[in-house]
Structure formats: C-alpha cells, structure tokens
Image 1 (spheres, rainbow, N blue to C red):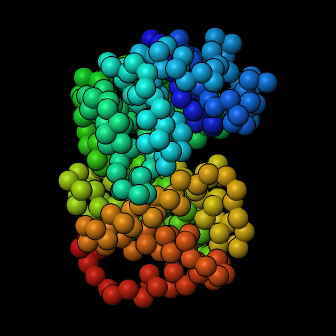
Image 2: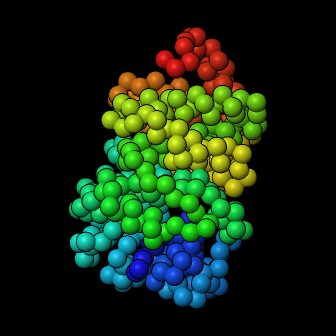
Image 3: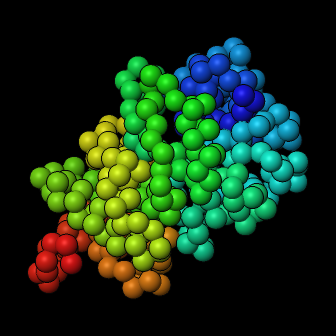
Amino acid sequence: MKISVLGCGRWGSFIAWYLTRLGHDVMSWGPEDDFSYKILEETGRNEYVSLNPKTVLTCDLERAVRHAEIIVISISSQGLRGFMQRIVRYPVQGKTFVLCMKGIEVETGKRLSQIVVESGVAREHVAVWVGPGHIQSFVQGFPNCMVIDSENDKLKRELVKEFRSELIRFYYGSDLIGTEIGAAAKNVMGIAAGVLDVVCVPLKGPLMTRGAREVARLIKALGGNELSAYGLAHLGDYETTLFSPYSHNRTYGEMLARGARFEKLAEGVTTSKALKMLADKLRVEMPITESVYRVCYGRGDDGKRCREEIEKLFARKTKGEMD
C-alpha cells in the first residue's frame, strides 16, 4: 500500500516508522524549513524514532500527495484548514485521508473530519485514527489499543486490516462525532490532570469520572452517542494521559500550576476554548472544561488561579451524579 504521512513531528515520524515496519511503501513529508524535518533529513532520526531506510523523506508536498493511495495527516489541528487548501490543489480524487490528530477548530467549533470534507474531499474517503498510547512506549515494544472511525464502514475495516499489528490492536469506531469530540476533549482533561499533580493528586479519580460525564453530555448534544465518552478515544486515552510522564498536555497543566511555562505544543489549550464555545452555544454544562479554559487564558498568578478554580468546582450546587 502506498502511504504518505504528512507531518513529521513526534506522531508523524512514529506513524511513518510504524507503517514502514508493516511493509507499506511510505513517504514522510515535512516543511523544508521545519526543525522536525531538518533533523530527520540530516540524521535520519529524532528523539523518538530512527526512520527505516525504506521510508522516503521529502519536503515536496505535491510529490507526497501524488505518491499516496492513503494520506495520513499529523499536524497541529488549528493549521488543518489552511493545509487542506494546499493539498487539494493536487489530484486527491479517490484517495483516502486518515487524520491522526486531535482537536477542534477554535474559530468554528468544527471537527477535523468536517474541515477535510469542507475542503472538497468526499466524506466516504475520510477516517480518523485516535486512542491511547505514547510513542516512547510503542518503540519499546509495549502494545496498546486504538480506534479507527469513519462514516464509511467498509473503509474503516480496510484500514484496520492494513494497519493492525502485534503492537497496536485496533477497534472499529461506531460514532465519528463521539470519537472526534472525545479524542479532542482528552487533551483538555490532560491539562486538568497536570494541575492536580501539583495541587491535589487524590482528585484525579473524580476528575476522570466527572470529566468523562461532561464530555458525554456534549457528544449527545452534538448528535453523537454519549457512551463514546467512555471508550478508547476519550476515557481510555485520557487514563493513559492522566499518569503519563510523556503527555504534553499533562505537563503543560503541571507547569501552569507551578507558575512556569511549557514551550512545546499542548493542543488542549486551544481545544478548551473551542469546547467552551460549543458548550455555550448548545447550553451544555462543562464546568471542568470551563475551568481549564479560564486558567489557560486568564492573567495573573497561574498557580493561584488553578487553586481558585478547584475551589469553585467544589462550591457548585449539589446534584445527582448522573444528572
């Protein structure tokens, strides 16, 4: 199978490594002036993986698009719309697009698959690949479970057949709305988990359950199956993040609570803003998400604001657990 992986950051480079390992004809693309691309071009490796010699590295986007039967995209979620406008300049008819990224467009509240379809790709050719797992664990040989979802049942079954291995056990997703919203919201809850690592670790259990509950409410309001919040895309991935030393979002929350700054990408920051917008629009109660939004976008003493938000959550009116 001819596959191009667009984006050669930590996930993109891992995916190229993984799919080449399965025997696919893989091309890995990155912008010529990007550090992630430069380090791979110069050394053939980064801090996560060493590229297989069979993987073709290129900075020519047209070449990468024309090469592929399957195009896997792994970039920052907020850059997807502009990136798709570049991609569709080249022949994409009949090609499959797989989004291995998590987020909600902050300006519109759109899911990432919606952005791809709005860019001109047929809905039946779009899938998402999400779920638990950290690259550092995968490359050490520790297996995990993930999800591939699409509105096209035949497509997701074909992708699972091509991508499964002893390292990743895939499940078929059954609710694209819930899968995408849950995967994106996991990063927001990851920030909250990092805050609790500094402020009050015992609250991680309640965070996991109450966080999943509010995400379930939003999924239902958007027309998805609220049970998706309790699957691999959200709760499963979130539990992995909750205790992981590798999670950017958890580390961002931890450093925020300490009054420090995390310089790497934490998708949960912009996602908290997008989810708050959706919650306000649909009148869905999401108190944890709103607290994360306020500490990420507020001003003043970050550590103090984190503690104040926890106090506000505890001061809320008592209600039934499943209300």
